[in-house]
Amino acid sequence: MTSKLPGGVGTAYQDTFASDNLPSAETLSKIDFSGTPELATYPDHMNIATELLDKAVAEGFGDNPVLHLAATTWTYHELLDRANRVAEVLTEDCGLVTGNRVLLRAPNTPMLVAAWFGVQKAGGICVATMPLLRARELQYVIEKAQVSIALCDIELAEEMVGALELTDSITHTFYFSKTGTGGEAATLETAGDDKSGQFETANTAADDVALIAFTSGTTGKPKGAVNFHRDVMASADTFARYVGKITPDDIITGTPPLAFTFGLGGILIFPMLFRASTRFLESPLPNDILETIQQYKITQIYSAPTAFRAMADIAGDYDISSLRQGVSAGETLPKATWEAFRKATGIRLIDGLGSTEMFQIFISASPEEMRPGFTGKAIPGYCARVVDDSGNEVPPGTPGQLAVQGPTGCKYLDDPDRQLVYVKDGWNYPGDIYEMDEDGYFKYVARADDMIISSGYNISGPEVESVLLEHEAVAECAVIASPDPQRGNIVKAIIVLRTGFDGTNDLIKTLQDFAKKEIAPYKYPRAIAFIEELPKTQTGKLQRYRLRDLETS
Image: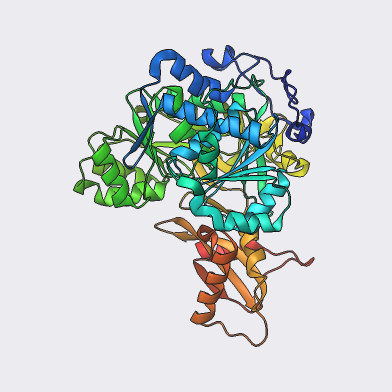
């Protein structure tokens, strides 16, 4: 297949906002579909809902389970019916036209999936958000993506209502329950009850926009990473097919939210492509995860290194013999964690490096090929190399910037400056420092920017700084990553106080609580230190690296 970037091959979205705000052609990475037989046969027109849901039912999998939550199980046919009804509500009651953006706000539940596929079937663009985001964070996403419709879980209504008070972009809002049994308050289900359950999926182009995934950057403002229908399918046809090796008998679970592309791919897209099923977790605590694996005979799990380390310590208390595979991503998998989980369970964890910008994992290795301490190799369909600052490939064993090419590539929404940072000379630069050995295995060295990765969450230091600076006690602030044995890193704030304030434990708690109210709780500074003066350059720029050096010295 030849890329038609930018703009699609002919569905002519009625709302052209997303395609109008794609990067210019000369700033895009090289796209290659010759890496696997599956990629080479992609058609010009493709819709995720057709490939994963409509075809599953047509192929005879309609009565097979697809989603589980607690005592609720939906079949592929039931999911199709729900998704069709959502699509009908969107088009008939909201007036959605192809290309409109729809905000999705919910934890991992069957109704979130129905809403997600309903948007895709109608030819809309999904803008899924983290359940923990606050009103002001939702406002930014809504306005950046020019969202006009919002579908929200009933239990998350408070911040949604707050966001609606901050912006007038949203014209229609519906609420839903976890499993489609929410009563009158669940206005999405109530509206859907009056629909037929029949809907013809939009015939989107393979390179029409399917979703905009927001990921925080070092500038403090989230970036909208655009992914096409073919990007989503290509990730499944590479990692899931050649490394994950999913079968229809698999029951998959995982901790990442569907708002993360790691979660969206690992615990929804991947299993559905191979007609398997997903069990959503009711609790992310290690003992509850292991109990779920034991009770429901889970065969695969997607999670972060910190979760695998915590599970390794107590795995012996549970019968998890059904589990055959674990996939770790979100941050590098330490060798000690890999070995601890192997010793406790016999399972050779799969480490994976991916990015929201490229949708999913592009460097990894199957369990039998995994090497402790290494992330893996470029997976089928992708190529990767380590280069110096000039883009020249460096010898094996030499640290440098990771550069990647394949069937997916970075496409920022209306952010040309950041696009030039991520894509250079046709290569994607995820922002990681790696070294490669003689066999093509990649070993993680460090992040190349100021992003803090804590327990699998990507946290922007400048974003946390901007919130803390709103407090009357804070004169100046720098937020950095502080090494932590459990979380990999924690967020640490170095603060210069205003006159009249003392750096007491009470003030630390006050500042932490203040941050939790303004931004998602996982971003708050778990450590706070006070300092007389922050290190700066002669031109007044903050030297975060000097503070980071103190943390690691």
